[in-house]
Length: 363
Image 1 (cartoon, rainbow, N blue to C red):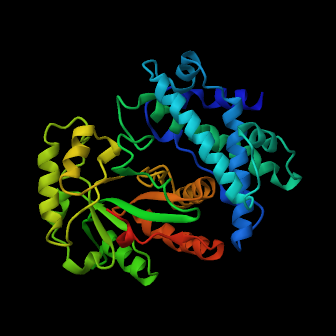
Image 2: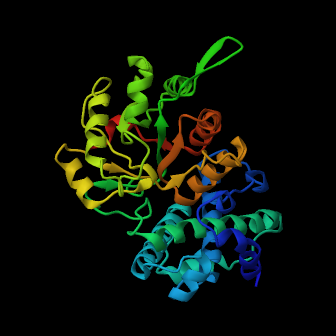
């Protein structure tokens, strides 16, 4: 009954196209226990997973009619939704076993049964907010699965041998990635600043090696200093921020961006398609240059003006607890990416997580 009421409350936002109303956010202060070590992280992670399972089980998406009612999309791909449905169950079973020190789960029903255990009273406020978060997050994911592959995205792979999402990483491993740069210079009180430069400086200070997916057009026009991306990795985001699934000039986009990147770092380069939209011919073209597609499984939504720095940080940390590994998507052209970094580093250090070194990823 509670899930039904939440759906009714959220229905106006669920019936529209992508927009800020559907972004899942959660106040992490509602989680009453500090995360001071790996054990604390695992306990919080297990509870995040069980919270999603409760929502997932109560929000039935097993018929076209139910999927359409939930997503607001009538032209759905039922096969894609069924595949996503199965894969997320498999991933969560493994994630939960990792969170509870490899406890045994024979099947999905075992995990569902664990999600029905009564929570401590001090988790009541968090549990209610978490239900809202995961109902919204379920919508985000279900919508992408419903549209795939008519509109491709990070929800699924077109070629598992040539694409990664972060689900391939070891438990506790995360890669920071940043799109849409390089940032333009800004001047305030006669002081010049640059979001990308400030971010790369901070990453180097923390000995973190992230991937920056630049737009070729911006790289050529802004001509950032050659050392700005030292110890970081450069990838291609295309020449312009257009859907490379629909854009007739996608080949030229890849070629021109590859040429611009060569002024800074050696090939090959990972490619991240704007909006995650690509097609099989594009992947085959990348293969000729020994290049692959890097998608993501944790979307910060930092571009959303309605989200504060804290909203974005809380969302990312919640999804790190939920997925337990992966590729985190930020945008270096916004200050939120830099402002979130200290707390992400604190979490990583205390919980004994690993920042994947972009330079060591096999191409």
